[in-house]
Length: 71
Image 1 (cartoon, rainbow, N blue to C red):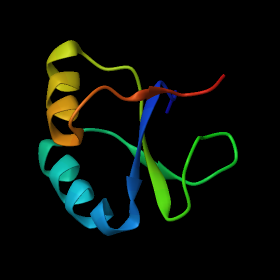
Image 2: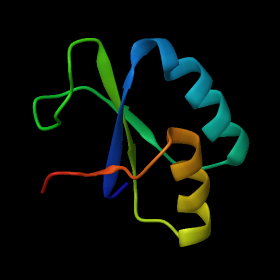
Image 3: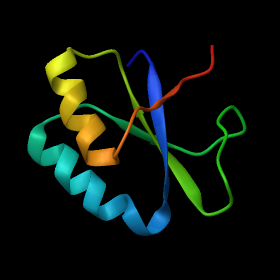
Image 4: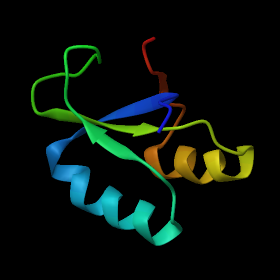
């Protein structure tokens, strides 16, 4: 999967978000790593480029725009 953008989230939100994304059949990966700007206790939901209609659902779910994945 080519990585385009990500959302940092708390571990407490992971289960709910995974369930919602799986239900909508939206591709994603979950990462932790030094490349991403994550606070302690956070993980990143990482997404590929996607159609604007699909992105709108992701944006609504996470409450805003994602962060650009580093090159």
